[in-house]
Image (cartoon, rainbow, N blue to C red; front, side, top):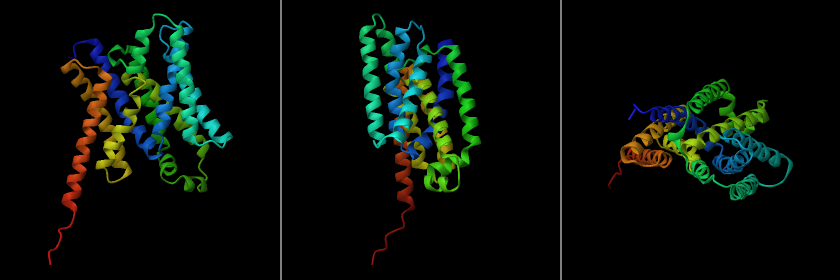
Length: 275
């Protein structure tokens, strides 16, 4: 299994991006931004179509740029209009995804590329993408841990963060950019349709078991790692598609954590006294 270069690259990508998505997912779920990552992922389809139309052999760079534009548009419209955030995200996701589908309908011979980005193809990840994934891991981990205390306060108590004088707008902007980059990079693993699951399921698993935010962060990292690597092993052993296998493995971990939580609650409950 590990003797094939494509499998080695796939495992390295899963080892890098699985824990990274798990780490960011702790803050994403706590701030109720799961729909944000879903919006960015689906809107990136327009970037893929645009990149192919411009003649790029690999449209990933244009995809990332379009994803960042969508993320910044969400922030700008939230500040400049009275629309609810969910409304803004639904509007942009629908518009950009429709533009992407129209773009694909005008292109010829790119059906394979559409399937690759919609459903993911982790086994086609190249050496450059693996290197970019680890570079992104280093940048995101460095920035998150440098600003861990302010970001945690902003996540748990936004009003208190304002009162404390933290640069809330700058922190939100940096976090949104980091999240967008990670989501866009992870599309090659799981595809546009499934990528949000890697951001949501590991922290949900960790929350079932953790007693505090530190434990939740560590457990979410581990859940992302086990889900990514375990999904690839499952895919190889049973000849299944890689992205969906990672999601199924992550969902299996969530179910196990749910059972563990129920078992712990049951054994913690005080005995009922019979009169």
